Length: 219
Image (cartoon, rainbow, N blue to C red; front, side, top):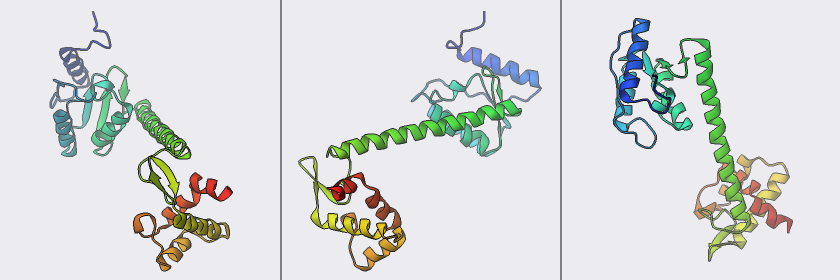
């Protein structure tokens, strides 16, 4: 009886790999068996060994029983596939999923994994920004205080001098001045950014687009 998908023993996996490689007439170079799973990934030392061997082109194709033998995390999976296979121009075969990067459908599957990973990363990033924005709107502490404010008893409190500078940025930007020119103007006037640093176009843009600043300027 075939083993169930969630009950693949090391012996089952090795048998599958040997049978597949034999059917293709390929030479089996080495088998890495995950004695222990750490953080849902292939054991760290074995993953390093696999990446080392790939970088030295010690093999042409990576054959696995199924994708979760590399990692159960979709974001890690994309990184691992890229680091081992794509960067080193090494093929990938995942037996259970029928994934083979030597054919068009296999290459498409890798592309889909990349798209899903990027979507997941963006979703998490957007969600994080939304949470931070809500906390700041409520005056709750989130990391360093943004320009124009400081923390007092875990609440955001306006800093008058910085609010004036933020107002100047708003005025110049609304008049059509570029972020680069505003940054140069502030630096020429020796007006420090947060914690006395140098102004850059991006830091000016962050202040200009800050919802906290817009809230103050509208009041």
